[in-house]
Image 1: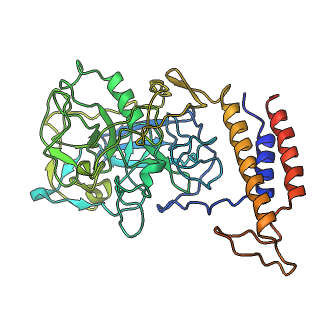
Image 2 (image 1 turned 120 degrees about the vertical axis):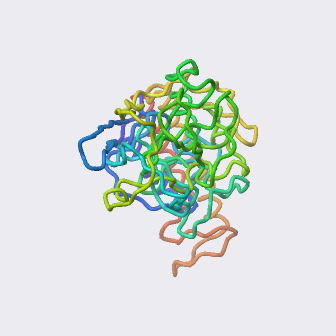
Length: 412
């Protein structure tokens, strides 16, 4: 069982009192939305619903969701953020928040004439929606239109979990990379006997109404020949009735390693969408015209999507990009659970945090004493103000209190 919320809060408060040199909180560069409740970190709180209306002048497909993933979303790779460890570590909480969304897209998509496109390369925030309700982002990670750099360990991908996503500071969980858990779930639900042989299943909708697929083309090979938007204009009658479709590009993960690994390479860019080949609902209601993006006689229907919890995680030997392994406190076998071993995650994280706090504070107290004016002797890292530093006796008292709190937590 989990330690109680009050116990967990007490542990975190004691860690702060110990005067640990916690790094500044990482600020995700993407914009945020005011969140509500936290998402279940194993995916139990996910909702997704579609409604198709063919009576309107512009037929619509409405997507309604709370934005929560239906899979694992424990924070990783954001040292300094509460509940999050450094790169390759498993945290104790999810940053994802419930964010109610209602998105209207064309039910009968229309292609822009003469190959025209609308760029979304530098757009911040959601540009498409996955079939589990999760936001799909383009490659930009800040307002300067800098892209996810898979060759730079300081880039955002080091905080992508085993399912290929992470949350920004507003709590919006999203994908820049192929959503590995969703792709696995969709492919399992739609075996190749039901689609064009070997082709990935659909995993999302672009906001111009065209479908988004995983990274495999017919024959089970990596898709090639994509346009600048990461799409392909082509009819595949045994797959769907669309004349155009988008693809996620690059490798999917082993469904266990942190950060997610394998992952796309630089050659797989843009990983998700970079522009829109069709018109959005807003474009069409404003009078834009083009060519039909679907086969004659096709009738759009609402998809069920994927709100059922994902339960096909990888083996505990899953490695990350450095070849290192860990043992998840939440995944056992092929499923994710927030009970049982989750208590160990809270207890271990608290114990490690206070140990580091006590060591750092004692070292500072011994080597960098504060004078009475409140100034401190410069150290190799940012020093703690006298009002926030702890003496050796204070550290000892706090450490004893944490030991007692940890013992109490284990009783729950």
